[in-house]
Image 1 (cartoon, rainbow, N blue to C red):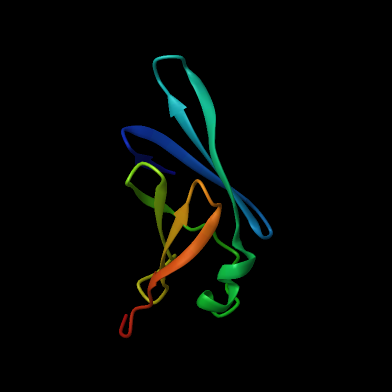
Image 2 (cartoon, rainbow, N blue to C red):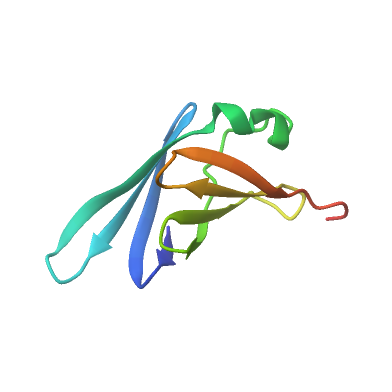
Length: 94
């Protein structure tokens, strides 16, 4: 759970897919933000894919910044238009 672009967000993970929902208080509804296929991120996280990648921010209105579970994990950018994850950086030290 997090706050993203002034909306409460929750992530749900089912093996290799992460679904992100956000709450619109004006309508009182949860809206689907995106479904992320995490299979191309497995190698970046050394096979540790049991957890969701928490959203941090929306960039340029069509990219989602996601962080790893700990400071040792990479930070990735998910493009909401192309549905592709791209590696932003991998920390060298925790």
